[in-house]
Amino acid sequence: MEDLPLDQVRTLLAVVDEGTFDAAAALLHVTPSAVSQRVKALEQRTGRVLLMRSKPVRPTESGQVVIRFARQLARLERDARAELGMSDDLGPVRLPLAVNADSLATWFLPALTRVPQESPVCFELHREDEGHTTALLREGQVMAAVTSSPDPVAGCTVRALGLSRYLAVASPAFADRHFPPGVEPDARRLWEAPVIVFDRRDELQDAFVRRLSGGVAGAGPVRHLVPTSEGFRDAVAAGLGWGLVPEPQAEPLLRAGALVALAPGRPMDVPLYWQQWKLDSPALATAARVIAEVAMEELHPMPAGRPDPRPAPSAPGTRR
Image 1 (cartoon, helix red, strand yellow):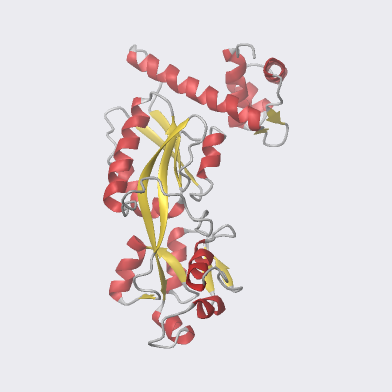
Image 2 (cartoon, rainbow, N blue to C red):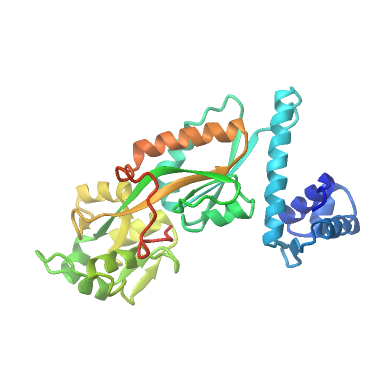
């Protein structure tokens, strides 16, 4: 493959970020025809179709490779200008990160407040469940992500953060109605009872019931979709259904009697990892260090002797 002309690479990035050729042309102060010609020339050089001409445009798999290269190139250029004292007009460092909603609602935001701001950093958070955050890395939309996958995306490093623990809980009234007092809910009772799920990709409750039933069944047919972490917790506390709530959110309500544990001593643990670009960026390195430190304080440790556990086939691969 021939060298990639930087003006063509930057133009492709502008088209993807702005969504249309016209918007990219306005940003670059050139005509839409010039933008189209640059993208076509880059596609001819690579021998690949790089864009799907939809509205907004979307990069193809090959286009994602070039977009990731373009973002990394822009980051390296910025850091080089900063080291050369040419950064007065560059503004704050921009760090696009992907994180799941439950981490965002519990430990992740406090971690960001501990990132030093001697050189201003602008965080751009993309909320996605931990089973799908790696897709944003592949597409080049983010520089780093909290993910449930220990398998590194091409061009990325990976480190274990810890276990995010979930507790099966319900309101006292809901538990009395669906699970007779003194009877620990079994898989059949859980299947019959209404359940809260984050969205249609949330398999955590199903995995929990499968674990209790030996893989026979998942969660039941009455499934209420509540697509925010705080709303999920509040829906369970209100008695709409049972669900697996992050331990930091569940414990205060358990102590107050607003929730009851359905399976004491049987939590559901989801391993979390940090993946980031292999890029010599001081701002990204500092943020990654602080986030890992806070995760070590707030999450449960990975099992001894298993620094990079893979989820079992029936374990949750997608959760808020």
